[in-house]
Amino acid sequence: MTRKRKTVAELRSQRWFSAPGATGVHKHRRMKQGGFAPADYEDKPVIGILSTWSDFNTCHAH
Image (cartoon, rainbow, N blue to C red; front, side):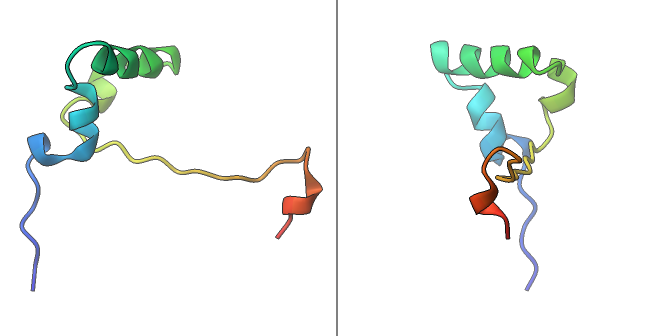
């Protein structure tokens, strides 16, 4: 069974940026501080990759 593709408005990341008030403004500002222009994330899914690796704390070596 195939899933129906989500529209841009249904993407969770788009709800972050369209939040009313200070919440939406805060997210726009953080993206701008990271060097991203609105064209980089508007009308697109936002995908983040996280790594917990740290050279400062060797007990997390796997």
